[in-house]
Amino acid sequence: MNGVKIIKSTQEQASAAWINYLNQLRLDELFDALSKQDMNLENALIEMNKLKKSIVSEVVDKNRGGNKGMHGFIGERVQVYIENARKLIEGLSQDYNLIDDNGPTDYMRRSIPIQQKCVQNKFGLDAIKEHAEKYPGFIDNGIYQIPKDYYEKLKKLAVLKPNEAGKLTGSDYRIWKEIQDLQNEYRVGFEKIEPMVADYSEIQAGKFDDTIEREKESLKNKSQELKDNAYEKSRPTLKEGAKVTAVSAAMEGGVSFCLKVIGKLKSGKRLNEFTEDDWKDVGLTTAADTAKGGIRGASVYALTNFTATPANVASALVTATFGIVSQANQFGKGSIDSEEFIINSEIVCLDVSISAISSILGQIAIPVPVLGALISNVVGLFMYGIAKDFGLKKEEECIKKNNRTMVELNKRLDDEHRKLVELLTEKFKQFKSAVELAFDFDINIAFDSSIKLAELTGVDSNKILRNEVDISNYFTI
Image (cartoon, rainbow, N blue to C red; front, top):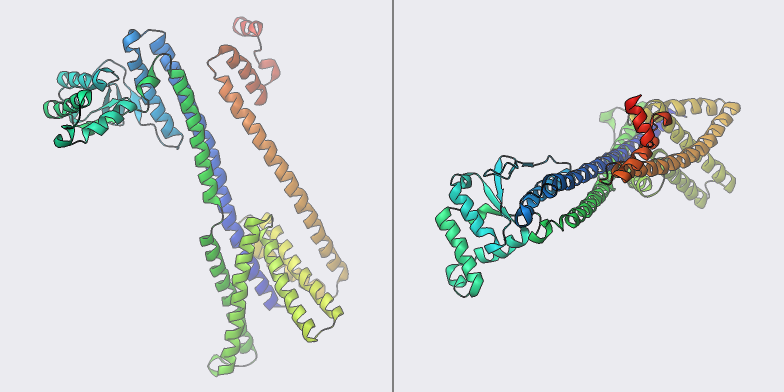
């Protein structure tokens, strides 16, 4: 095999290796994003479990606030933990910090103090007035929060101008007046009032369980949405395909131009002696190979992204197609007979197969993107050229046998890889489920699930506490 063929083959595999590298980058980013999102969901659900535990232990069990005021303490915790969980599901830092000291501030959102008012009478406006009167400096930096449904009602009234409000009747007009009074007398403009994450009914003592469960489902849906977005982002795009096509065309055209000019220089001509026909010949060859490069880039990008075809093999398929089409044209013109057409086509396929196999092996032996494929392509084709040129049939047959072996091995490895990925996915689901159940509030469920989690993670069976006797022995012996 001559040097020109090796150079062109190396350039073709360079395009394939580069495309494969781009594809792998997208897949790596996708896997990383999905793994992080699983962790984000786990952290968010843990936050929701903390919410339930805090409400039960710190509010319900202590009867804090009594029948009339308990929902206020529940509301504070619902706001803090749900807002933090919604940040965690997106991989962001938690913003809220519960103060819970019966002082002027119920909780902080970063550096902003917040007082929550969950009062039915006048949607909490009187309660805000009382707080503003008692702590006149609070409004300078702080804000008030009220139940989401209360806020929506007040917002519709707050934006009305006096002439519009004059058309209101009954309680709506009185509430509008209260909003104006709150702003004029207490310096609490409506911009200083925000909605909570929950409605008034959702923070009642008998309703917070349902609220938590609904939020958990919402978090799971949000997590799946973010996963879907990550998948969509990782998919091949027309823009990237166009970029690949352009670069591949430029690479192949550039190599073709250089080889054609070098060929004419080797024939004895100097560059300043090139005639118009010489430049025309160079230009036509370059244009043809540039077009081939564009087709190669687009084809390899499509084959690697929409079929289960490795980039090296995809490039070889395109090269073989070009070669066989060329032989078919010659056969159609009568330049070669049918036997020569078959033999030449077989040689073309063998040449590109050696190139593809060499690149694949090189990328495994030298795991540096693109570089390994190029080095092995050159070495493999050089060895193959020697074997073919010197008629070393035994070596050539060995290479052919190796080609068949590699094809079979790739198929077997693909099957094994698919099975391992499926097994890993199933085991990971079992692990996540076991972790969640191990922290369940039901002690019996948590205890049984902790045993299963220990078994799943490979803990020595003799060290697992399975019943009351085991537990008693562990602490007394």
